[in-house]
Length: 454
Image (cartoon, rainbow, N blue to C red; front, side, top):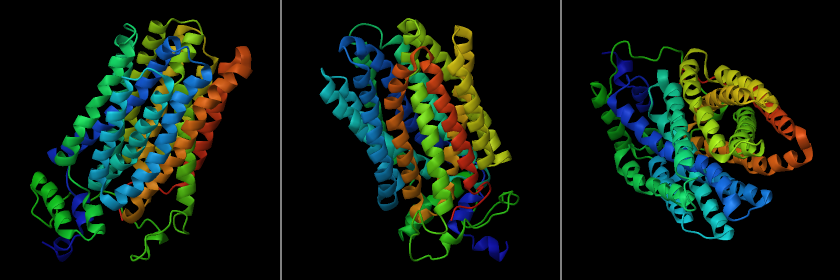
């Protein structure tokens, strides 16, 4: 055994391990929470359609049901990342599940808009905080050569949750006056699942080490090494990362002071990642939360519209699969830009679609490309920041992106009303422009494929 092998850092030891069952438990455990998050976000688009009739909601009131949730998500993402840097990834992940699970379950019992809006805000706090924290946890515990792929696979659980939401929306929500209540009642599941997260998943070794908890960090690393059949502190022959590792930049120079997100070494990547998050959030939530309502407005009945949405949603899965392959072959940045350009093209054609066939084809293409972009985005976001500010950096980017998700639901009805017969064309042209901007901003980011996390 060489001296260099005896004195590998814990990050190197984790990064050079083969994939093991312990990684599977990490991925599935985190992904289940991710899927439950997506189920809640997707389900509200179906619930709104029913509540609009039962509660006689105006277009503005329907928009606020979505928007108030995203206000909570913006705050939750920013605070969640900072809390994860202070209290740990796993603890904050579990806490977010409790917050949004209880709030979603409680919303099934309300009888009026005011209380419903308050609960949707609380749901947003939990949802917003969860996503950047979960992706950071998986990223910090994954083997370097497949780290991006595992984060994309984590993000693919979003499609599972969204499909589940579409199934509930199709089979449960329209069935009777209380169908939407039964759908939301299923939102209690995350609160129960928080117990699994808290006691079944490991804490980030990088975070433990950054807090001076070296014995606990060593225990986590050795757990993964034992799962791989690797002796503590060594690597198996041939399991080193296949790409050259490089430092993330001058922001790493001072080990005593956490760098600011807008410091000289991080400024360019922070600007780029914020712009990408903004463009992707604006277009994704503006389009997909309104697709059921837009289809109803085009003359399709509720059941048919929900059925179209279910088919469109299924296209998310192959989008994730291709992104998971490309992030390790082409790199994160190129894959992200490619899927964003594809999203722009698909959004444009969806705005021109009028027949059932064209709606499904263009919608499926948009779903495929957009969710592939989301996968690559979640892969690269935590990798561009050092451990001491990784949670804060990922959370701030997600929080800024949520500002777009706040604006989008309010912008859509405004443009539809003023666009007249061409309202859909105007709306999806705007989404096209947002995707193009995000694709350009992706080239402000460093390529992180094969780099050890600092």
